[in-house]
Image (cartoon, rainbow, N blue to C red; front, side, top):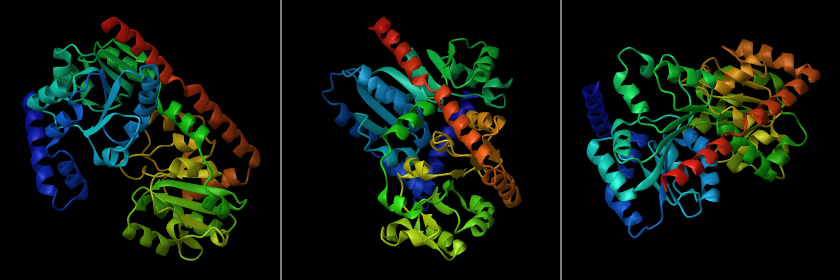
Length: 416
């Protein structure tokens, strides 16, 4: 399995280089890793402060790690934070995040890269968020006796760790000093392969969305657009989601206002969306506060507003679950919105919880979405019950950050 792992890494690196001239994401990954060790050495030159290393695969994992990073910074101000990303969708959005002192792409996993990276950064603690299990980095950290934590981790029976041939992957998990899981099922899976250094802490994203909701500022243009109407918020949508949503939009505008924030913001996608909707639609970048109230549909053509936009919602549809997987439901759930999404949500514990409590409604097609929506739209008492229960659920799940920071404090005292 180690040989296959090495072959896979070599092939991935070659494919990345070949794709870079034609693929924007591959190009960003290549460019971001050019002369990386020279940049790292320059950044860390003369640093005398202790360093904690947080690694996130992408933007979603960053949002899970963020409350822990910020709580760590407040609790341990003498430490500097090194933040790494694997994917450009995380690095390019958060490369200027002021909560970290050093922000880089993670050099691709290899024995030489792991040694050089750790020799330069010299972290006293490494924290991996949710996913990302890199053999050489974990092995090198373990050999250097640097504590390694996994936070907001979640495991499923179909993962390779739990297969008869998964010994190589199980060995990676055994390098962790401690694993903080989102749920009891994950802890029990780990115990089934004799990994017992596990605590059920919950998902740090609950802490994050509560922080965000408490600090949201009004958006005057959106205030003028909503203008007292019910608002159906559509977040992180893909073309497959819009196929399901368009009949509902056409049926209920203008009595309901719709805000659409596509997952991918580019001109071709925005134009196609405007054309699909037809009359009564305006893009955010071209709207004016004095006239925006006359429109029924507002298309967001920038990034960074989604969390705040959910605060205007009466209902919400979360995209992605007709494709690779559902996007963040908690950003909307914190405001108590009845939620709708496609059928591929089983990998997301919070979505499964919300569906089980009948606070969120998965649909397979446009007809199912219309039926589910109309049942709630026509029943104000049901809508209020969902709102109250949704908010209560988010509040009850909060607190993972506090548990993790308390343990980190004890760990750092013990290793000092």
